[in-house]
Image 1 (cartoon, helix red, strand yellow):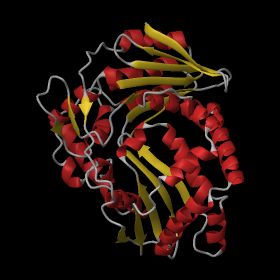
Image 2 (image 1 turned 135 degrees about the horizontal axis):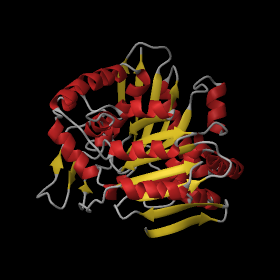
Image 3 (image 1 turned 90 degrees about the vertical axis):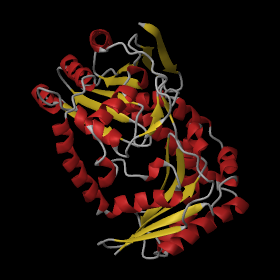
Length: 422
């Protein structure tokens, strides 16, 4: 093994092992005493936004159809003999996979037969098998999935807001792509994307819970196939500073109208990890369920208990979001912007901030009670070039001055609202 290190945090008295395996894969291991199950993730730094890329062997960047990362995730479970789900059914493990905007991960959880389950995971992810016939069959399945989500109000209000915010960023496109874009996907494109992004230098194996670390490493030594570093590069298009549209509406059958308000920030905000914690603390202090804004708006009937705030961020995108249900979405939009303007002058309430800081810190500490959360946090941290304790350190150290500085640079007018109503 090379570059093996123990990453420890004295504040929470927790640690895990990180190493760069000779194959190129980064391996993160966190055995957790007292746990009855293990949770494993085998992930690639490859999501729906990564549609323009090149390796050092390519003369120039290539742009592939939207939705290909998700398509590839669907197809990888099948090989020439059977599919991985059938193998997991024999071991009793729970297995799944997901594609997000900036990553793809394959996972299992189990309370027995850990070694056998890890072998299944490492084998099928490293053994792609695509034919014209199987690719064609999957196209119909994914097309139905896309159409189903196109009729879902919560999905539409979300993606309509992204389309209103962004001119060029591929984050505005459904992770699964469109019916038109996936029609262009064939086995050759799948193999090209697989060979570029599923190179082990672009992947992380993350395991937490009840397992033997030495046994896991022995399996890695046997099954992880050495991979040359391809010099992979991706491109997120440049974005104008302002939002593309201020308001978008769509009519779908439903009850109370849904809304999502999005505040646009430069793409580079996502590269500074502390921004995620700072802006979440800002939003909760200013607009969250314990704030003066929320209580007043709730008592007046302008909003209901579905109102919430969050940060939506990933590789190359960063938004502050407020969403929920209301009969008067335009009024909510103006009220939110007015409250941010008011707080810039009046200042953020210190007691509210202190409560949010404690809550945030407590929730991060609470994640160590879940093997799933720990494995996910280790993988995500690697993809963001940090460690899984960074958010805890940020939350412990954040001050009112920190989030007041974020509020001062908050451009409430660089925003849009998406509305879905019947």
